[in-house]
Length: 244
Image 1 (cartoon, helix red, strand yellow):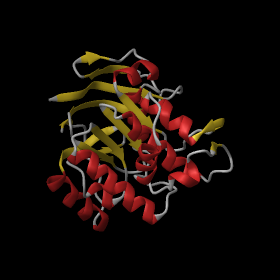
Image 2 (image 1 turned 90 degrees about the vertical axis):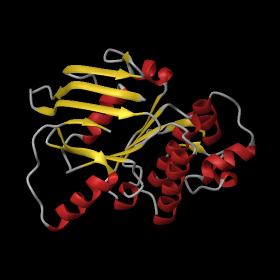
Image 3 (image 1 turned 45 degrees about the horizontal axis):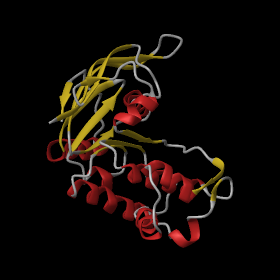
């Protein structure tokens, strides 16, 4: 079942420079999709366009058969699209418990809070009543935001470089969590990442370069070409229409 569809999507800077250039993309429900590619290629911009943080210069977006092009981030969140920022924001006066309960839309008992924080490598007893302020490190606030996205159990959860700023142990636990979500068919995951460990658990991989889809398809087809590129870099290909 097609969950997300992008048609001729483009986004330009105020000076007219194109960052996203005519992307056609189709994402199936219940998949773990990793978006990768060179730095500056447009990956984060594409994620923000899907989430509603940025509005496209042209083109159309559809979610579960409904056009969402003109919807803002709040309207899209209500439809079931969640987004974890690469650099999470902080909220003075809001505790970790508050954040997770707001995300889930209900009160959570200690067992549930412990489970959510455990998925990102944090001990609930140490964190649940702490404020989301400067006392938390960048890695800690990042993991708490990821836990809040998981708490939502959204139809589509977008993670922008979730590995950034977290330690290796927590990263390993996070990968296990992504695998668990996929096994349980608990939503579609769209993850922006360069990490081979995350690429290796993907159902599908989309490569974005210079604002275009360079290649897309099942992990078994795309990952070997990426690993080969590390040894012998090649020029980005032209635009493709991607269905994954």
